[in-house]
Length: 46
Image 1 (tube, helix red, strand yellow):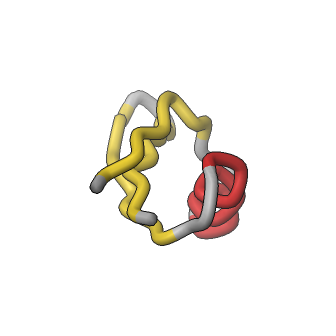
Image 2: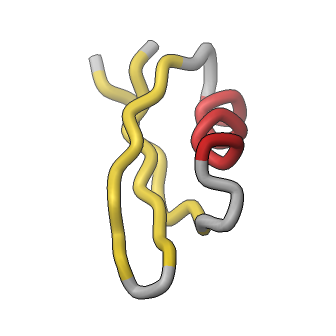
C-alpha cells in the first residue's frame, strides 16, 4: 500500500511517499530515510 508521510525538519514540512504494509512500517521507512525528522501525519493513498 502507498502511504504519504508528512515530516517536519527545522521549520520545513515535506512529504515522503513510501510503500509499506501498514502504518508502523510506513513510519519506520520514512524515519530511516530521514532520521532527524519528526512525523506529523501518515495517510494511506489508494
